[in-house]
Picture (cartoon, protein in one colour):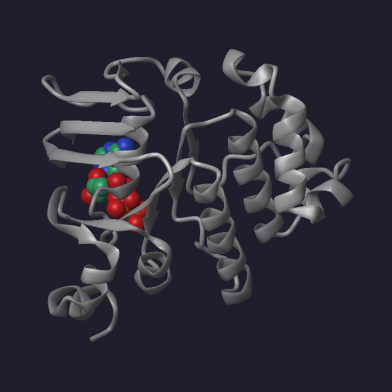
Length: 235
Ligand code: ATP
């Protein structure tokens, strides 16, 4: 389980996250909804150790404390981030990108099993194993990014707006993959602007408003909530 307590992040004088607490269990999808600039990417980067959070916060995965740890240590602890913009290596092939994902110690002995999982989820990647990633479509690059994260043998996967720039059809496909991953026992922290589809696959949700958590609850209750419908679901 991923547990975050009292996480605050400031960029200079701008407080981007203010005392955020949340948890993600294994085998559940938790969505964080928020407008542009609400702090969603900041939250994932701070959990991943890419940006520092202020003193006094706690973060742990399966009881192991990870606050103030370096990104590679956090990956070793079992957290993988699929960043906004994907962060894939365009000059490397699909296979090489996936292999890089298997670099953490925890992942090495599971490389073949995880590669099979990735190719089962995304058969197109198996067929395009030798293709340079920069020559692939946005949707295919998103698959590579998700595949690379799977290769690191995560217990928790964090997705930063995976539907951004994808067609409705591909968006549906990516969201389907998230539900398949959840069934394998991975806990998923999903940051999205696509509230309708993400609430439809999520177990629970948090609303992030100007850096702090507003409402939170079961996804099926949030979908019915009038304020949520007004703010995120177009009335
Ligand atoms: P979006 O959906 O538009 O990506 P977001 O919810 O992910 O938004 P963040 O990217 O986390 O929002 O940004 C939160 C706030 O922090 C914004 O006001 C943003 O301008 C500010 N911010 C983010 N990164 C930096 C930075 N490196 N330096 C200064 N301010 C930043």
